[in-house]
Image 1: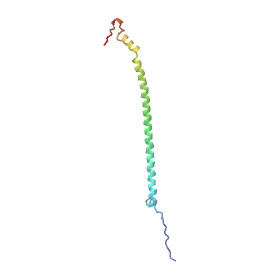
Image 2: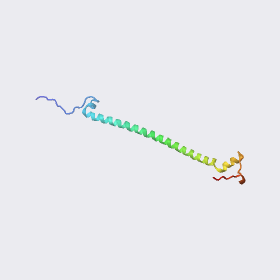
Image 3: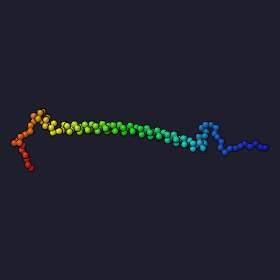
Length: 109
């Protein structure tokens, strides 16, 4: 009887990282790198999304403040430009008065 050494089709690598460099380990290594890259992309995307959302909220807040200020300025403009106020300032501060009809001259083209 002769002793023959049993050969196996697949031998397990001896070290913990040797499996990564075999043909079967290449697929696992590629998948691990792909998963890691995808995880980093998800984190970066989420960070960008949150940053843009914060910026959007700041801009909406600024828009609302500008709208309030615009409304206040329109009210102030209508108050300052009213006919009664202009007439009051003209008579009290500038000493102006409404001319009598005999002092009014109408020019025709």
